[in-house]
Image (cartoon, rainbow over all chains, first blue to last red):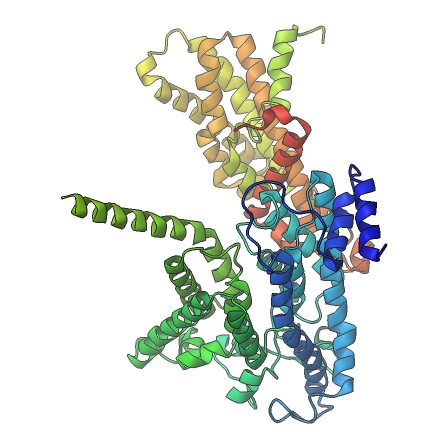
Length: 402
Length: 214
């Protein structure tokens, strides 16, 4: 008997045990189980939930690896210990020293995120007696990528418990949640511990600890700088595009996000409609603000001037709108389901993101708030799209009958 | 309980758990969200509602046969309003700081659905003694939830209880703070009160399946 057969007979032997779902979760990771559906029609397709999730994780891995290098790079750069890297392949970026900081700081975030999150999932599966759902696989990967590198691990753990229980399990688990769990976790962190989630110290490893000492350094994000009507010297658009700027762990490199997006669109996991419409929405709002500035309604003295005067296309490469559009907004559970609904949903996400970004300096990045808001509205959008369709078809029937 | 008959005792114990005005009837939520960031405020609010509901129920019950039913809502409003004004004035006189924290929410007891609900549903159809017990019971049920929510929100949100540092002084970083505890700002925001009330409802209904409706 092979390993698979052994595992299968073990499963059969322990059919009525409470912990069986926990075993099954690991078992199905290794092999396709022997049983088949007993009744009803079933569609045979290779892309089950696990494979879908794994595809997204694959698309996220480059961002994670880049984020690990970037953590070290920003740390050493802010201390003035290395030259700034010139472009994506700069010599001072892809060094082992940088990677080491990444391993020390970023990998624990991943471990905590998965450890705590999966523990909660297993617990609920055992209590409720259903199979462990794979929904957390992607969430667990997204979470470390959207937090500042220096966040204390226990905070992350608390937030993950909150996000998984309140954001997902209370609604009935994977597939039933209204809000994107990863963003729920980020929102919790943001509102619970704002000093760790915003400002000019948290984005670079070590900056918080060094504050107040003669060695103090800061690593302001571009958005933070723009919101204060200043701009950061020495960062050009290519740096933003390649991602060698301070920010949350994995969202800085627009280049890798675009590659991930193409991969997701190609494998038909992510919806290109949502991604595209989000970007259109963001550009539209950016253009409106540019128009307001051009018309002279907002002067340089206004506190909104800094962000409003940013050329509209730059909104896509500063901040995390691209990351949000590709990996967060496209979450199939919380997004709109209908094609027309997806266009509306995405457009409003982009539109509102930039609006929050400009008008509320307390929330320098509005993407997560905008996506959470539209998550709530997604079912409503779908409802009206479907109703509209029904009405149109009824009309057609009537015309034919007459 | 020798003092009360079994039926009377039920009037008090029922609203405490299985017929709780907040978690089962989902009334009086607004004040539960607004003033529970501090334990002290929730205790004072509980007493205020206890007074208003206890006395109000008796007054309405005494007048129940002479109130024309067409204008009963107005009569009820006047009774609540006068009682609330008494509470408000007492607070202003003896606990000024606290009355400032509670601000408009004392005044808003007038619109607290629990009170009008009990007047309508109970005091208009029962004698004064029963109405009194019912008022006390419901106010206590309200108080229990308010105090639980206030307890957790103050403890985790500011690390204090009744204003006394419990989890250590945040500035000196003593106590639990020194090993990394930090105030949870989210706890001080009203949405967290809603979530805590939700959790209480969750616990309550998973312990007593009869309460699950649908």
